[in-house]
Image 1: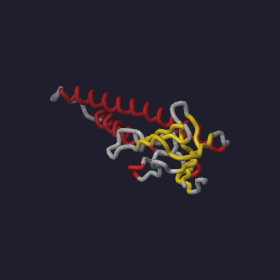
Image 2: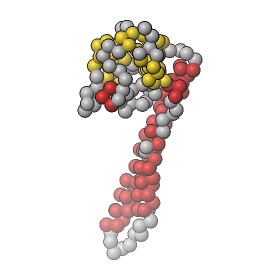
Image 3: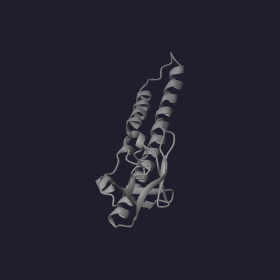
Image 4: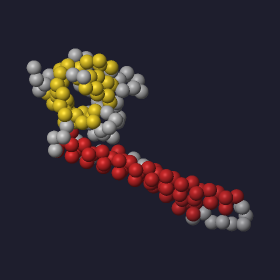
Length: 170
């Protein structure tokens, strides 16, 4: 019996733009900085000098730290995507076929992984983790994996776990 329904295929994925998330906050930091930079120092209110200075420092700190985070996540996102793409395009992945065993579903509340074995190969993932570009849709949120399901999985090991590049079910 061979799996025939394609549930997930990396070939249909494009690079995630999740790394753009910090950009609005960098904009807020720039706004805070320039807003406080524009406050006039007047002799009537000495506290305005401290307010201006603190506001500029907070705005600048936001911009610096969020920009560093943005750069790191952007590099990591592109690196992970092109690494998975290279493995997929060059067929440098392994394939395993069989019945899902030792199935542990992710609980309804999350905060755990969905994990299972197929012919002795262990798989583990959680929803909302798109960093490795593999299949990560838990059954509790509409995913396809279930106990005793016959599957064919194309995967590679990224050094931490087996990443599912293609999932086919019966």
